[in-house]
Length: 272
Length: 271
Image 1 (tube, one colour):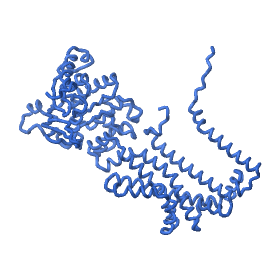
Image 2 (tube, chains in turn purple, red; image 1 turned 180 degrees about the vertical axis):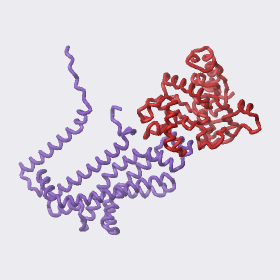
Image 3 (cartoon, helix red, strand yellow; image 1 turned 60 degrees about the vertical axis):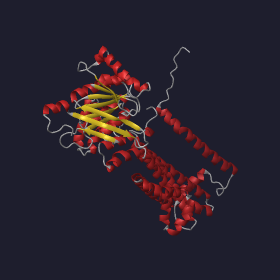
C-alpha cells in the first residue's frame, strides 16, 4: 500500500442522507411487497386493499375525507391550545404557591391516569358533542405540559436565582427574565408530546361520539367505513390521521429547534 | 453608614470602612454552626482575601455582606454610596461559576443588573459594552455564553459585576475552576482593574498563592465554625507584576500564610 488512498470523509451531507435513505427504502419495499401479495393472491379489497387502491380511494373520496381531516385537525388544535395554556398557567400557579400545588396536583394525576376512552362517553352526556371532543383532547394533552413546565420552573440555576435576588428583581421580573426562559426547553418538550396526544384525544373522543351516531371527523369516518365494510376508505382515513400526526410532530420539533438553536444543548449539532 | 458625621474628612479617609462585621455568627437550619463569632473590618479601596479550608464559612461571609443571607447574631454593616443607589448596586458579586444566562447573549447578560433596575435600554447597552471593554471582551458582546471559553465566561461574569459601578466587589472563588495559566492572566487583569477602579474587593479563595499574589491583606480562617486564625498584611512594591510571583518576599509570605493555615488541616482548629 504505497499509494495514498483518499479516505472518503463522511460529509454532513452524506450523513443526513444516511438518516433518510434507509427508512424510505424500507417503506418502498414494504409497499411493493404489500401490493404484490394482494395482486398475486387476489385478495379482495374488502379484506385487504392494495396500496394503489388506497391511494385511488383517497383521491376519489377527497371531498369527504378532506372535510373530516379539517374537522379533526381543528379539534386537535383547540385541544392543544387549551392544554398548552392550561398546563403552563397551572404550572405557574403551582410555582407561586406550594399550597395550590399540594391541593390540586393529585387531581391532575387522577385526570391523567384515568383512561380517556372511559371518560369520553360521560363527557358526551353532559357536554355538547364538539365541546366534549375538545375537552377529551385537552385532558389527554395537558398533563405533559403541566409536569414539564413545573419541572422547568423548578430547575432554575440557584446561583442565577441568587443573582436576581441580589439585584432586587421583583417576582414578575424573576418570572419573565429568569424562570420562563430557563423553563423554555422543558415547556417545548411538553408541547411536543402534547401535540401528538391531543390528536389521540380527539380521535378517541370522535370514536366514542361516532358510536353515538353523530360527528364528521376522520376517526368517525374510520368507524363508519368499518360498519359499511368500506375497508379502502378506512385505510385512506387512517393514512391521513397518521400523516397529520407526523406533520404535527414535525412542526413542533422545528419550532422547538428554531427557538432553542442559539443556546440549548438539545438543539446544537453533535460536533459542538 | 459607618463613618460618623462628626469625624473630620481626613480621619474618615483614613479609617472609612467599606464593610464591618461584629460578632457575627451563622447557624444553618440544620443546627450546624457555620461561622463565628467572626469580626472583620475592611477599609474602602482595600483588596483582601479570605482563605480557609472547605466549609469554613468563607462563602457565607460574602453572602452575609451581600444580604443574600441574614446573620444568626451580630451585625453586618456595609457602607453605602451617598445618594440614591439602586438595590444591590453598591455591591458586585462574582460567583464561583460564571452563572450566565445561556439563553441570551453576552451583552444582555452584562446588562441584566441595569435592566432589573429599569435603566433605559440604550444607556444599559452602552454601559454593558463599556464594562465588557474593561475586561477585554469588547468584540464578544453578541456571542452566546456557550461559545466562550471558561476564562472568557468568567470575564463576562466580572463585567456584569462591574456594570453597576459598585463600591464593593465580592468574589467567591471566581477562578477556582480555571486552569493555572488562565488563572494567572485573570489575576493580573483583576489587579490592573482594581488599580484603575479602586473598588473594595473581598476575594474568597482556596489558594494560598493566589491570595498572597492579589491582596493587601490575607485573612486566614479556621475550620468550621469559621473564625479568624490570622490576619496577614502583604506589603510589597506596587504595582505588582509577574516579578512578584518569583520574588523571595512572595515565597516568604506564602510560607507564613501556609503556616497560619496548617492547624485547620492538621485537626487542631482551635487557637
